[in-house]
Image (cartoon, rainbow, N blue to C red; front, top):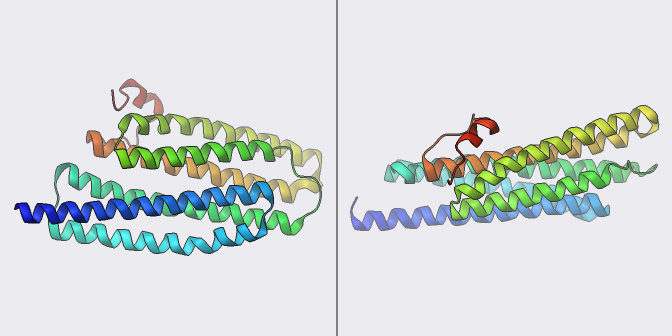
Length: 235
């Protein structure tokens, strides 16, 4: 590749990275807003989170198109090709995280509309789980920007804790519903919110594994945590 074409390719790749960073920031704001709406019962914030999902969807289409055009025009190889592939997959995961934020907002809307009875005691645990998921999202976006495989590995490990929290919260809510059937509707909404948070953790894990793929050229998508621990990335 000539120096001129190489410079053009670098500029296009940097532009894609910048747009991905913007999308990541927007999705982070969506998740944060959904969690704030859930914690504070903010109806206006619920509607803003739901409405903003269209902007995330538009960015997904825009970035997918940019990746396709770069591959077609520049025919990248090695780490550049892995980067484009990782961006394309990360865009999909970010869009789905945005979808989960919208689901949290909609479940919160249902809770607010119902507005009867005391909130299940597990609400506090769900809020704590939400804070951990938001930290995971921030961490994996930072790992992607810095292409830090060691930091990405920590995100993969942290997802196991999120899964454990989800199972514990679900068990407690099932018991709560059995003890007082009047709480079933509200408790189910809380379960759906916890499930969305668990899915956000899964998508963060996917992005982290894409970072490892770019940095090390190692496809770890289908490796279990125990297998990864035998040879952790960034070591």
